Length: 196
Length: 186
Image 1 (cartoon, rainbow over the protein chains, first blue to last red):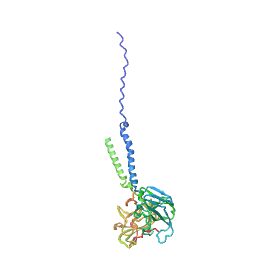
Image 2: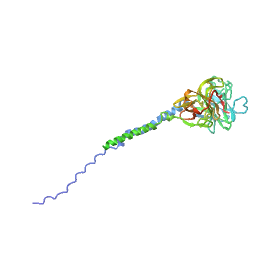
Image 3: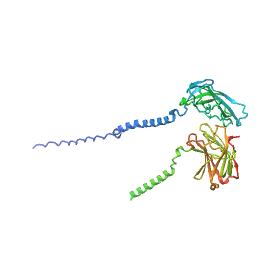
Image 4: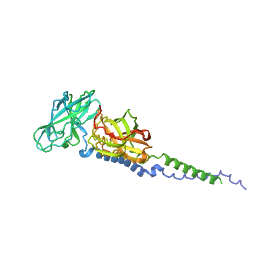
């Protein structure tokens, strides 16, 4: 009779392998997340670019000024423009000019290169405030006169002057810009410095 | 039982939310609606590109313009001075509407009036607008709205307009009104 073998301590059951954790949500969707990170900025850019293009492309509005100093002229858009001359008209007898205002007449010489020109009426801009005036020929009681055209003449290739009157309040002293937008200038326009 | 109560409470809450949302939802044109400035007769009202002083408002049974054109009816005549504030680009006074309840009347294009008048920056022009109205509106309230739509084809969007409330019943009624000739305000 021998002593039975002493009991061995029970071996602890092998700890079960931690079940493999499923990959995280971020990992599972990484392809979609990368696509999102690219597509969201791309969409914003495409929408913004399309809006920008619809507004500014096609040369539909004058955006970029071509500055011309007082007394200078500029060759662009199929003609030589300037120098602009003009000033306040003090003898307004026979004209319908309201009280407390100044009548400013401006002449913009245009010398077409080969073809006639197309442009809208010049615009007077107060540099300090950006306020704009357009010609008021009929308002001051003048009929249109072919020797004082307000717009460019598409059929004339010899030099001529656009002559336009503006009425501004008498506290508006300038300096001004005179803006002319020839059709062939596309998105740019001529901006003459002008002090009456 | 408790679950039933919760479901019904949730239903009621959602319905209430839906009702609130429909009540506070702005109309479809709200994102581009104009900003109204309320004017008084005789006072200058200013928005971004329109400065208006309404000098007189009255009813008339007949209007006549300076060229001799004349028409009988129920007319509302508005004398005003108007100028643009910043730019003369597309600066005609082409929004001139009178709203009475849910009806809107445009300023008449008959005769020579201030309708579609070309405005000048900071130098007011003056004239008369006339509205031809049905006979049944003389006791109502009306709102005159003036604006310079620019490129907006008759509609002012995201820009200022000037509203003048008018009590039609309180207005004097003249037998005949001579519309002011369009010209500089003096």
